[in-house]
Amino acid sequence: MGVRRSRVLELKKFSLEIYTALSCGENPISYPDFKIGCIELAKHLGIKEEHGVLAVDRAFAKQLLLKESSELESRRVPLYVCNCCGDLGCGALTVRVEKISDYFVWSEFGYENNYEDGFSQNEYMRRTGPFKFGMDNYVSVIKPYSKS
Image (cartoon, rainbow, N blue to C red):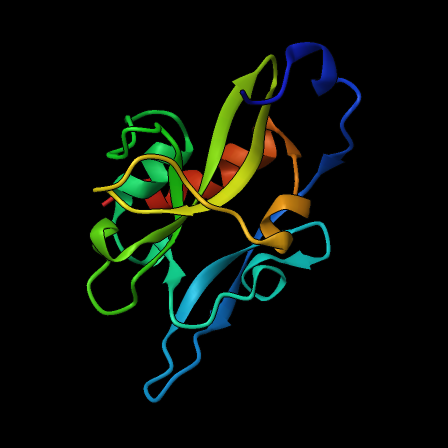
């Protein structure tokens, strides 16, 4: 469903930043992660083995900017993928990304893969967002990761 245009003005505007996160497991990997206001997103969502897409492939950054279509049938954009292979078949934490007026909006956080329909949500995902970002802030943070 997404966020209705009329509700966008009501949403609080958040700042988006990137910080360096560290995955859990035997061989921890550092990766660029999303910080929304004071929320470190991977920690908030309980991400342990997956890592952020900005370290995997610039195509994901282009999808976050809505410059390329998502590979998923749902058109949702991956935020965290398998830290071994980055394959969507292993599953990914995804988000609906919309550009409404001068804002980007993230909503409906969920878990999905590229071979089953739909997505699932745990309690944290259901309670997370929507987040509204000013276009200038959003593009300045994501765009550097879309370049080779």
